Image (cartoon, rainbow, N blue to C red):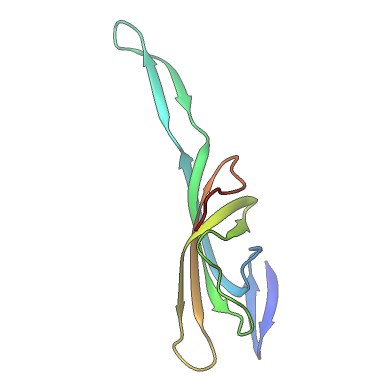
Length: 117
């Protein structure tokens, strides 16, 4: 875990690329896109096919004052996967800090999007 200074405060940070924040926490989960079973004439499962992984991640922390918020469809990298931003929330509870939370989705093998608005 790296350390980052913001004003007079020190934060432990996790490597998240393309998001300009002092990261406070991250979470990620993944599941197969599908699971299919082949059965024989007796109804017994004889083969299983598991699809590629897809998943979600949430990154939260403190927005850096001189940075822009990520936009829907932007990408960030966490744990070696490219996540596409699908939600951004920024909360300013006082004049010094803005809390930011970014969520995204990934699909194994997908690195770009077509027709993003």
